[in-house]
Structures are given as C-alpha cells and as structure tokens.
Image: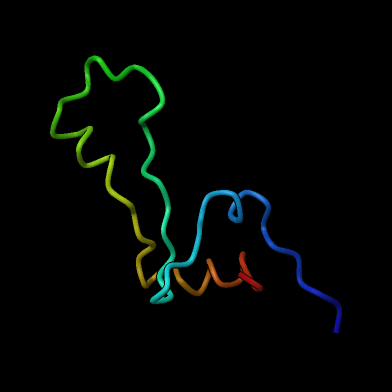
Length: 65
C-alpha cells in the first residue's frame, strides 16, 4: 500500500488533544476588532472542537496525526 497524504491546510489548522478530540483556533480574531462586541471576542478566544459528525472526514484528512 502506498502512503496516504495529509491535507496541507488541515495539518496547519487542527491538532489532536490528549483525549483524541480535534482542536482549532476560532476565526475572526485578526483585524477589524473595533465593531465586534466584547462577548463575541471572548467567545473567539476559546478553543474550538470538531463535532463528532465531522470526525470521520477529518481522520481521512489527517491519517497519521
């Protein structure tokens, strides 16, 4: 069997946690922060986790992670 390739974009954006979940940084924190509410920016600070419904697709994108 040939080796599988990892998806380049996915390997830069997602990482596995110790419990096996996939974590990512929330979007929208880079610029134009002035008009975003404080509540919204606090939510964006938290780590996002991939939902269980998408885990099969993500495992195909990151076969060796």
